[in-house]
Image (cartoon, rainbow, N blue to C red; front, side):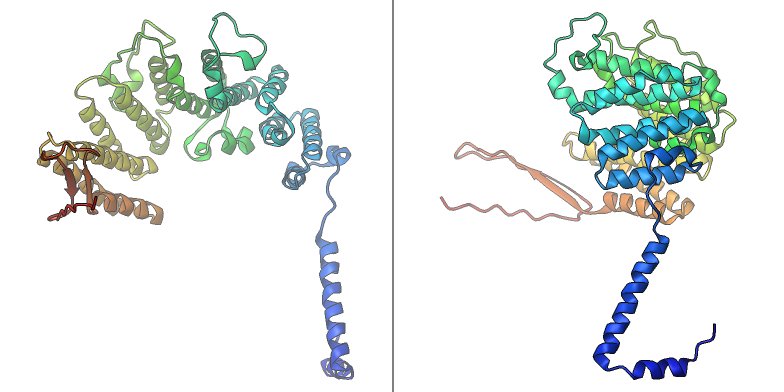
Amino acid sequence: MNLNLMNQTSFLKSFPVKQLKFILAFIGISLLFGFKSCTSSQPIKPDQIMSYSDYDELWKSYEKLRDDGKYHDALEFLTSIEEKAIVDQNEEQRLKTWFVRFDNIKPLDESPIINQINYVEARISQLNPTSQAITNSYLAEVYNNYFQQNRYKLRNLTDVGGEPTENIEQWSIKQLLEKAESLYLLSISNKNVSDVKLETYNTLIDNLDGNGKVLRTTIYDLLAHRAIDHFNSIYANLTQPVEAFIFDQELAFAKSKEFAKGEINSPDEHNKTFRILQILQELERFNQNSSKEVLFDIVLKRLQFSYTNGVHDNKSQQYLNGLKNVFDSADTRSSFRAAQLIVEYHVSQADQRHWNKKAADHDSNTHYREAIDILDKAFKRFDEKEQQAILKAMRDNVTRPQSSFNAEQVYPIGQSFPLLIKFRNLQEIDVKIYKLPE
């Protein structure tokens, strides 16, 4: 279509200015609404879901209902997506409806966690073994979340022993945590899932593990890491047996191949420390041929756990040796993390000695120098912008001037009083004491 711009301009000039403004405004509004009507799509109705092949479009419609606060409509829509997933035999999408269901029913339900548990447990037997393993791990997390949200109320419940009742609200802390632990262990009991690649359940990975797509190789690998993180939590220790498990510290801090070949035994197979080391060993055996990034991520978890739970005098040096092996091995995210852990260890040790008046000054200075040395080496090896920013912040924390003082609130009249002053990265410090008017 050819436009005669001269004629168009002459035509517009024939109108008075006020009428011309009105016409242009009308044309603009018409174009805006016309564009909107052309581009906007009609929302999908629940009875139309079966005809859709693109689940992404269905999820967008669900999220729109949820974000608009239409929770009843969103729940109905979610149920329809699940029904479609059942017909399509798409268990990945079915599990996704279960995982997001909780966020939707929270505004509608007084007991959303309990109803979520009941809903999932009533249907888990319909799934294949891999989906059951994923769901057991998910349920374990839900049980643990229920405990954390209600732990103050649960402290008043008496543990009468025996099998738990059907009413979860009457369970004791021990029963809830034991249920979560048993589900985490059940999720990794079927070793057949070790061959199932993450891509099979790709849409669920971020919900289960934020590092899943980078550091996990199979569904078993991902679920085992989730179990380790739970057993290593402060809450899991609430049901720890009185008799401690003293593990072989040489083996616990050994290089990965040595640890994978080693033997771990305990008179109490339910001991949490024993179970974590056992799962870590299974993971390291499983990932011996994986990338260094994947393997060293597991090694770092083992080193941190062994350092935290070890009781031998030389555990600090063994911990540092293990971290340095990872740091020196390759320029991976895990080796960068090892550098951070080494620095954190030295700063922690230096701070403890620095603020302890019985410790020699050179002890704390040695640790500060070790921390700065590792940071300088890391600066040369890791050049990503984010990594450089983290290293700079850590170095600033070590080198910035700091001071503090401690004094009693009340002192006897006529007697001298002690005042403890600590400082570092300062050449000198001036102290003035003023008498306040009575």
